[in-house]
Image (cartoon, rainbow, N blue to C red; front, side, top):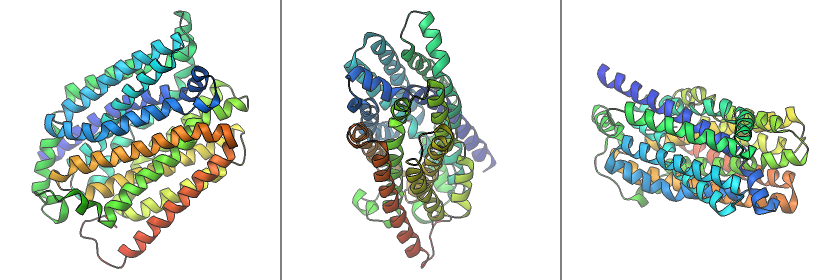
Length: 417
């Protein structure tokens, strides 16, 4: 058991390192996506298009990556996915200089494929830990995004200055950063993600025979999806992602309209992404100690406050606080939802359900990204944020109803309720 615990820690820290590098890559690029969409498309209505195709590519790839990792192993699948992102970063870099919207969108799709593969790493961390440690295991991987939250946006200005010296467009700088960081992430996964988490997960399931997690026979997907806990877990992740994306992708363009500098934009995106990732240890610990339900309630409540407070002022400090709270609400919802979903699945059920979940999350966020540019151009930022706040209220109500119902009966898995 001690040897298995050491292996689980090694796997988790390797996934943490890969997530750190990957998030720095994706966040540095995402900081300017809305500005480039509007510039290359010739209208503010195109602002959400790059993020939309990025998310759509990831959404459609998620179930395929999940099945592929089940066949090839988590290590090979993750490394392959990240290398596809390297290619996408290079394509996007060239497209910015050429002013080619279609090529830029193609690069975004490839980067989305890579992000989908890397996102499944949180489930790999969960499967190598016993049930009562899953929340923290997922949080350790998610917190790797803190590195990206801090370094990604801060690299926008200096990377722009460096590529200008080389004769390229300043806005292409973050995509060069993305390429380098993804190469490093692929190397980390390929060299250190050993043994494969898939094999370790089977041992953990054998060592903790109890309830759903130890089942060896896969239930039909429709049976799993009829379970209220699985429904709430997926609903929390889908709605939280949709709400967060709708506001985040338009933030840079909204701030530019209020004459904020690139430095101010980077600072607000940093505050947002710190909220998304830096407090993952807290959300994971609360999911294991308080239970999945209270963690989800807290996250959805923060999303409500964040959306509505974002409409109050475009000034730097209050707007940065709203975006920070938006990221924090997403974190609690995402960590809590991922942990709750992992509780419901046996090893044989993980690939199809986790892939389906991430596909639905990606599709919902792609729709939010695409719609945000159109809505922003049509009725402005405050109305869009208020609409997102309304969705957050619906999520809060659905989770509260589930928590109230589950409190009336004992939970078969520690930490589920």
